[in-house]
Image 1 (cartoon, rainbow, N blue to C red):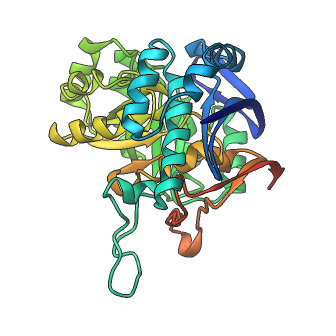
Image 2: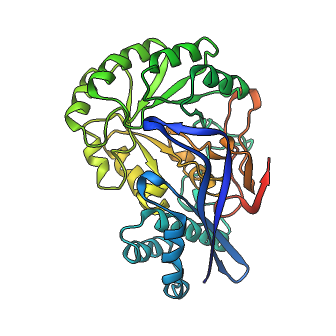
Image 3: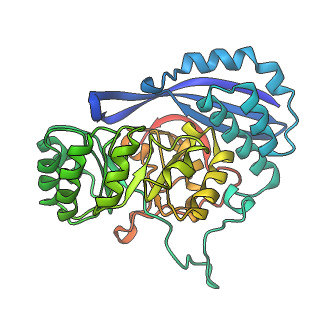
Length: 355
């Protein structure tokens, strides 16, 4: 194989803020390409400051191990992941980018989209129409003053909203948004509440028609989560508490579902195993994003037949795209993602271009 990689920076339409005041105006990412003959596979890993992940650091590791990666014989993507996992044991974001590119390349070679390779095809009837809709992608509203959040929502009509919270005015914020939409709202606290705050806010949010709450407490506040699980009027989903495969069984005791992030769990290969385990434990499954571009979002889209909820709105939040083929249909206001029938990830890479 031939390995190439580069840094990508895509601007957000609005500065993107989550709890604890973490704000970014651009998403910096590592992009990788694995080539074999006429086939190409692409992968992506976003740089995340609060996980100490930088593009420069990942590129340094790739250059250091370029030769051994290029010598690997791709005869099984899962075997490739195990090779990468041992090569970069402390760098799940980098492993994810290469694992994603490996699966994309494998799909090109096998002339199948990944969801078909996994035996999880979109449900189609005799007329080649979808029998049931896949989960609808939400549109995320980062934290801002209430007036600006209302403006963003009105500027972007969407079937489902995900709202970042973790402020002193969370309830006032959702109350104001609720005055402008009757669409489902999901809440993501990014571990920004105390147990006491959550016990007060969750009932109020339930009365405002909120659908679910993602990561209400600090990732290791198990005592608080046990209390919330017993009392919460809303489903609770783990994000920061459920990073790797080993976390799934633990979270089953404290949450109703998990949010799998490909970059944090180290790729598509372990994500498949996490879904299987979550189902065996009776957990709902969401797959979320770290503001990936079209490439990373297309990888998430390949999991849609296996998911209950999906948050893959990075391309919706940015003013530039880096690929074609990933379509968020707004037909009949259903917001469904069109099935990806092309091979591998189902999209084609393009140098970033304005929408």
